[in-house]
Amino acid sequence: MFRFIHAADLHLDSPLRGLSQREGAPEEEIRGASRRALENLVSLCLEEGVDFLLIAGDLYDGDWPDFNTGLFFNRQMLRLRDVGIPVYLISGNHDAESKITKSLSLPENVQAFPVKKPKSIKHPTLPVTFHGQGFATASVTENLSLNYPDASEGRFNIGLLHCSIGDSPHAAYAPCTVANLLTKHYGYWALGHIHLHAVLHEAPHIVYSGNIQGRHARETGERGCYVVTVSDDLAVERLDFKALDVVRWGQCEVDLSGVEDTSVALQKIRTVLVEAAASASPRLLCVRLTLSGQTPLHSEFHAGKEAWRAEVVNAAQEVSDEIWIERIRLKTQSPMDMEQLAGQSDLTAQVIEELQAMEVSEHPSSVTDLLGKLPPVAQGEMAQSDQELKENVTALVIDALTSSAKHEI
Image 1 (cartoon, rainbow, N blue to C red):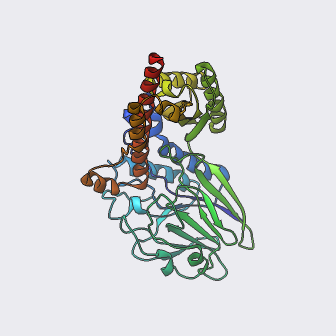
Image 2: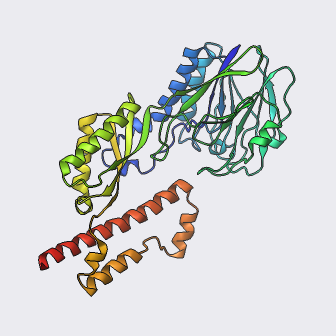
Image 3: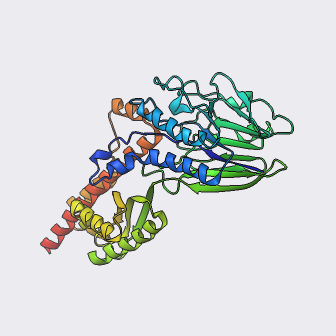
């Protein structure tokens, strides 16, 4: 029997663009999260006494700003060398040969697979054969798995592959299918690129370990690696997911339907944050909070956004000093009957009609072309910002119309 750890998508020293513009952002803690998660990965290898570590691509997040990124990775690998744990890795799209211009020699316990064609490597003492190929360029569109060799007879075969299987927000690099991988008859496929951990097939196992640390508000929930136990008859006996992240991203929704009092609203927010903080403990929890439901407080939220953010941040501080409110999304609705309001006058009816028809996402063609080149995550953020702008304008105008109608009465 032997055991190994499958990890991927370390994105070491991933830049956190725009974080400094967020009020109260714990920049240093978030900026160092990828390094601390890697330290956790190495510590887990030592604690579990595994026989080897697999890293299925994207060690880095593009070119290093200096050599410190590579030096830090090597220091962590030396911790494993000192106890005789070998490491096998492939490059992904973010650390392709064409993208990383700086380089350092790897410690002798670390073996990187070539990028021009697949290579097979035998473990020096265990009946294990590794097959892998890294990315030569940042954009690999061909199915690399088709050229992987067939399984070596009488050995536990492991394929390392950075690839896309199925639909995902990540770019479709090295696309392949589960059926493609099954034709190789490997005992385990260690996949990288998709940041959510998932077991796509069992016996044989085809597994995405996901990334070891969430990088932004859309990468919610626990992030980590798999500890894999292989029996004496060379079959996967156990597969255990282990969380490694030190900063947990979460999206929480608070339904404020029918809530009229601000103190009640804040108490409901505290209750949700208490539960979220408990699930993330002992990590820093970065929360994107959504307020929803039909409530008389709808106009107040939009008219006093700065004051309400302060109240929510204050409530979070009361719950735990390990919570940061990354963003507050207002998805509440006014209880005002729009048809009744429109009936106040022809002008009011016209204003409401214009609001409902408003399209704030219509950009000049040059801007549209530029937006189309952004990553899917960034495009989603832009569309969300457009929608939030429309909702904010609508809420403020409706509030003004409502106040005017009350004044006239």
